[in-house]
Amino acid sequence: MFTPDTIIDSVQNAKKQFVNTVFASNESFKKELTKLIDAQTEFAKGQVKTTLSIAEAMVKNASTYAYAK
Image (cartoon, rainbow, N blue to C red; front, side, top):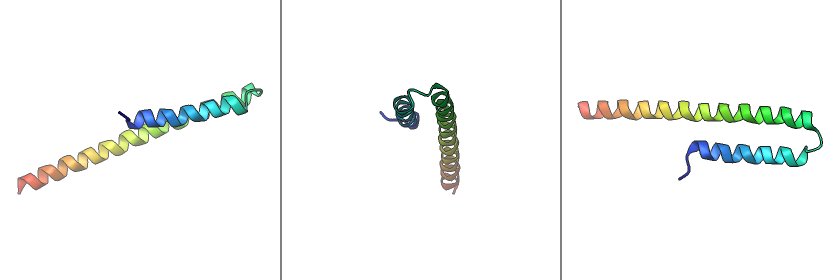
């Protein structure tokens, strides 16, 4: 089953593979791009987690409100 984290990891790992293939001769540039990709990965996972938390809270509150009437 695909989860948001596995999808994010797949895309980010593809980026890392591209960097390792294209910039194989320039180690310092490759290292910096890999750090950027890692930062993007953490940011994307945080955004998904936050969005899912907000959606869950909205559904919970809407359900509580709907059943209260």
